[in-house]
Amino acid sequence: GQNIDQPTEMTATEGAIVQINCTYQTSGFNGLFWYQQHAGEAPTFLSYNVLDGLEEKGRFSSFLSRSKGYSYLLLKELQMKDSASYLCAALDSNYQLIWGAGTKLIIKP
Amino acid sequence: GAVVSQHPSWVICKSGTSVKIECRSLDFQATTMFWYRQFPKQSLMLMATSNEGSKATYEQGVEKDKFLINHASLTLSTLTVTSAHPEDSSFYICSARDRGDYNEQFFGPGTRLTVL
Image (cartoon, rainbow over all chains, first blue to last red; front, side, top):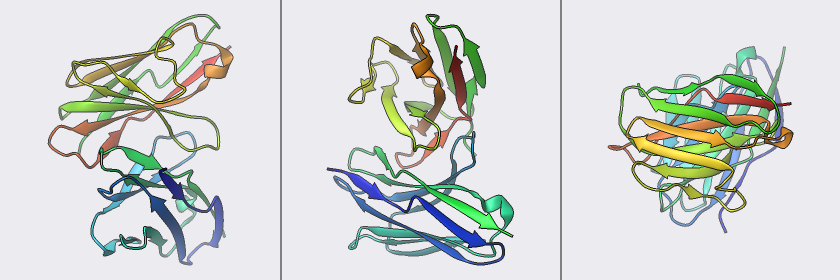
């Protein structure tokens, strides 16, 4: 079956760095997305990886290893506004998004 | 960037009434739109995939007679929750895929439905 695993909750300190891991098993693979979702709002796009390696975009970076079925989202210089849920989603062979349950990130001052 | 709107943003209704939610792609043509439901502190659950001009494909466990989906044009899909009950109260989110890009889905802002 298809499955996405990511931690349920993580806590980090303002100004620090945090890495949110995601492992996936899908029928075919057409890329890995990370979305940010604040409470009561729809998800917003953060990153898309389809090739192995690290993609850097400002304070956020995303890494993909297709052979390991593994991705991570790296957040640097954490700010209080980064407190949110981070959703990992893999695009399968039918171009259907398979969603993880999300990681709730709590930032402490 | 691609923009998707949803209307209404929130709705409160009495049990037994029907509620229609609209999802529009404002600056692109969406051959495929997706309807999700999200309960508090849970992840997105795909309800159905809607292709323009054809019947929607429903996920297992989603009643197609209760959640009517119409995708009559390349920019509009509607979800009608028929005879809504309190257990249907949820956050409903649509997303749309640009006909020229199979990879990314663009999300609407969501509709919060509360059934009394």
